[in-house]
Length: 408
Image (cartoon, rainbow, N blue to C red):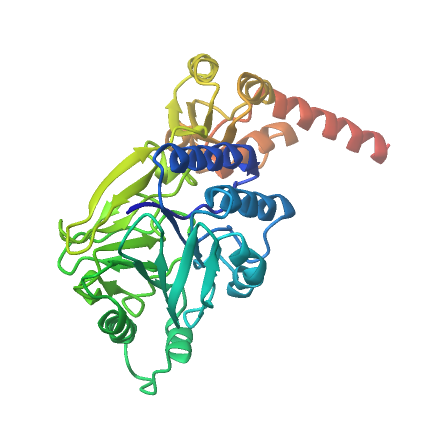
């Protein structure tokens, strides 16, 4: 049985002021094409479908259009869970109509789908809270899926029915997953867990949450270790971290697939992908990644001259850029105009004044007997560590002249 694992779509997300909708349309199209080309039997979307609780109409339309296409006209089951950016109520709300199209949403941890038969496609034959078993006609064995969308510690305990309020998240999840696995996940089917949370390998590398991401990890209260996953689970499809990570043993992979686009400059240079998983009963999961090629590349670039920056910008038009410019004085309006005319994807321009410290040390004493213009120059040097540029001095002269006219 072949599965496509993706997640952290963040539909509707902007990079500062810059809309990524067109890039998201392109990469969603690419994911759909991969599902068709690879002839996958099942799709898992591991949370953060949207970027916020109240997505735009455009983002909502793109989600439903993409999920519907991934179902291959209702023949391929698609399971999508809520992440920490999603509203669980919004994710659950289209459930009856979505199920008829082959889409199964899990917004809350206690979500229970109903048994369902889609003629000539598949059957949902067993269900429980946070669990479903799917039978596809082409396979003699079913797929069992434990689905745990994001929820904080309080909500998880509430929905999973734990009376011990002092129990840690780790123990609560471990007990819930173990109970479902023991009841439903034997060796006569393929067994999968999908969840959206911050998970580490015990004793392994500390994985950083994405820059600008709503953090899940608050100290260590919401930290879950991969050894909480039941032994019956052959593949764990995670969501939350935007970079690919495999934190499980080789025979039972535990995978963050990556987000489909770079969503912050800390992700610049990362390769984005989806994961293809081949599963059979009582066999190790076989995984491989397929790179995603759509979307504009993100760069953090540093230059010491405007001319050098403009040349690079012209050579890299299909990019989004955080630009640092080192100079002896503040950038002029003409400098800024040249940069923005050279490229439509400049998100930030960060000026760095090389002589700031040196100039600041020369302005420790101010001669109050100077005229107003010289006083302004000394003030500016003491405040900003550099000489005011020519444009600023022309503006000062204009303001001074208008003030004198009013006094006369």
